[in-house]
Amino acid sequence: MVKRNRMKHIKENAVGYSFILPSIIGFGLFMAYPLLHSLFLSVMDWNMFKGLSGSTFVGLENYKAVFENEYFRAAIMNNLKFMVMAVPLLLIISLLLAALLNQKIYGRGMIRAMYFMPYIATITAAAVVFSALFHPEFGPVNGLLKLVGIADPPGWIASVKWALPTVALFWIWKNMGYCVVIFLAGLQGISRSYYEAASIDGANKYQQFRHITVPLVSPTTFFLAVTSVIASFQVFAEINVMTQGGPGTSTVTVVYHIYDTAFKRFIMGYASAVSWVFFFVVICITGLQWLGQKKWVNY
Image (cartoon, rainbow, N blue to C red; front, side, top):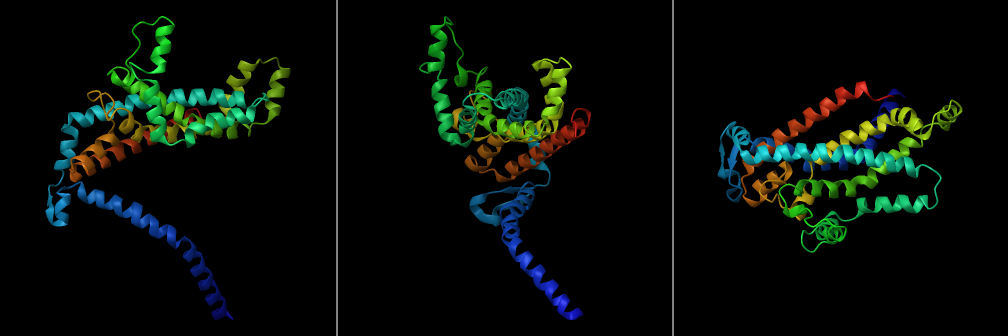
């Protein structure tokens, strides 16, 4: 009897493991192996056209080169500027829109779908359209600004000063629909009784939003803050399509720097070292967010 139960237990475990086996194989092939291989490459000087025989061990020289490279320093500064510009605006606008769409307004479903459409649009196509809209000479945005009396409108993606904010604007527009949907889910979990009690006490709509909505939706805000910061550091397709890091180094980001170094100039060892340095920077920022959430997130 004991032997039969043991065999049944082993059979059930085998069936369970067979279900997760494809995921384990996929993780090993496409996540774990490339991760470990990039760590190996980061201490090598590797010519990819000569195979593994074309590699030379250089120790920490690639990491030293990363911190001495002005292009990398410009990229990491651009990433930080991009995060500061884009993430707070994305969260504030998304929360305000979600609070508005959580009300009983005419055409609410259609408006929700309209805001979500950019998120599911192909990023390359959307970036090309956005670049055309903000073209410094022929774009309709500058045409409109000239019509209202602004004789010298910004150069947008052709300007060193405006290129990064323009990409940030596109990134906010592209990701706003996703954040609105997540905020709506958070808002619908707040009991209406809080608002009814606040109304009886004489609180107006702003006071209800400030003292009920914002604190009670803070776990959702924290989740979106963490994921949006990570996403802002991963910005690549927008840069590649709209500016390719220019003008100058005004829009180069770390991921674009890695792509440019690894797949255009084939310096794989240095690119792998940049990837690992970047990984630890993102881990540190996420860790700081995790420590800071104890002061403002209400569970």
